[in-house]
Amino acid sequence: MNPYLPYSAVIDDIFVETEDGNLKTFRIVLENEEDRRNWTHRPGQFAMLSIAGKGEIPIGIASSPTEKGHLLFTVNRAGVVTTALHKMNVGDPIGVRGPLGNGFPVDSELKGKNIVIIAGGFAFTTLRATLIYMLEHRGDYENITVIYGARTPGMLLYKDELKQWQERDDLNVYITVDREAPGWDGLVGFVPTIAGQVKPSPENAAALICGPPIMIKFTMPPLEEVGWRNDQVYLSLENRMKCAIGICGHCNVGPVYVCKDGPVFTRAEVQRLPVEF
Amino acid sequence: MKPLVLEKEQAGHWLKGLCNNFDIFAPLPTDKGYSDWQKWDGGDLFDVAKGVPKSSIKTFFFPQPEVLFQFNARASAPDAFRLREPKCQDKPRILFGVRPCDARSVVLNSMPYEEDPYFQKRIQETFIVGFLCREGCSTCFCKWTGGSPTGTEGMDVAAIDLGQVLYVEILSDKGKRLVGNGFFRSPTKDEETEAKDFVEKAKGQALDQDVASILRSKGLMHLYDAPFWNSVSEPCINCGTCTFLCPTCYCFDIQDETLRGKGRRIRYWDSCMFPLFTQHASGHNPRGDKLKRVRNRFMHKLKYFPDRFGPISCVGCGRCVRDCPVNIDIRQVLRSLLEI
Image (cartoon, rainbow over all chains, first blue to last red; front, side, top):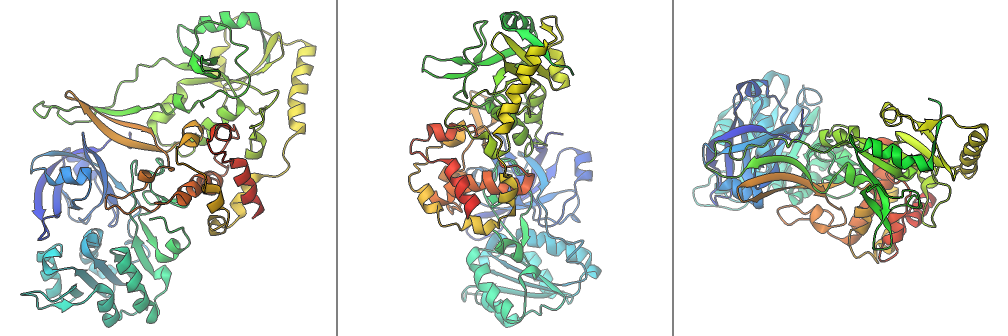
């Protein structure tokens, strides 16, 4: 098997997620029925999206493996390939190489734990996959808390689902925006501030945190104040990637490859590495 | 297998006989004043095998570029933008006159490339006829890196130049395929003694410390935070010469190209010495300054790679020492890391 060869797939649907139009979710279906049936991944894993003639990009898989038949990728328009992708239409061909990386340990370390999901901005994608997976296996986890923030209400991802999750009684959901906005009657404040107010207990718990580095930096002190340790906190790193299978050398952080050994690391693991991400 | 002997005047005949099935490459003189890898044209081979040729043999395993896939780039075509693997038309190759350092580099590079089908296919189709070294250059330091001037790692056939004859050992099944014809004879007693002396002499000069295990035992951040990285990196002009000449620098970029309706996805040599190597689409760059990039190259070879695979990712060929325009010397960096 050639690990550089993507599965052939088509774009099945496109949703514009944010008010600035810069984030779109692409629903992608593998062409071959057998590939579709055999596809499985762990929440937190990523795939290389391949647009022949433009190149490949590593994107976290936003769908849960329990959502059968298709894959979701929420993509920010930033570089050459993502810009090309944003111009594509339903029915256009695309390649998918994956699943890649390790993902969150949803079937091992996280089982039986209280789960705290903290996300900022568009880094919510693989945490959406994780949350959906956990809700499908609700009995495997204790309390689940979600703290999610964006700059404005219009910049929140997955708005319909956020509403549904807020209505569930087996889930504690805190959605916040940076400042007051017309029509917004929810929480206002940065994610670290809300985390400080929620004060999730570190007892038999694990936190999964994805967001801009500055958000992660300021979210840690309020957690540490109530007793969280670095080995209870899972982060997902990003670096430039080419091969995504641990050979090409682009994504290394010291001796580890984000693509192969990560992208998910505990904060304790990250702190033993150079800050090259 | 028992060693064999080939009269040098027979060597040309032997290799010509192999030309039907193989392309033969050797380090041959160029008009630029140095020897470099070129396709053998049937000429003299034995004034070439002195020192280390200008470039390494990585180009035979990791060509510039490797075409990973081809595709039709006309949007109206039924197979538009479908990637297909190219058919490799290359004949198997013999690399004649490979030095122990370069042969060993193939073994080291195979470790990260274990699951890379392109690289592994080229290894299967490349036959290495090595030449052991009688004397090193001023820039050679293979013994520091776990190698030896008489090391045979990575070779299919190892030859010792005894003046009139080549004393030849066959080291693999691939090697057997090359020497299976009638040009070889058994060595005389004198030739055996001479070959043994040759190897013993090199052994006598071996280094008594295992550099890789010393470096593995040192703390990652202790080496990363060492005080000398600033002075090591200061003269660097980010030219990348070290990377391109290095037999064990194996990082690559992948890019898509289209021209007149034909497209291909290629990979080619890249260097962690270049700022774009790590730059995110957002503009953020985890190794945005020179110190971090220079440190990464040395740390990868001397700490990250040994931590992952065991040996250091340097074979001591000395090409980077010889051709660095600002005289950055990996031997000095290695000494500093061992001492700290």
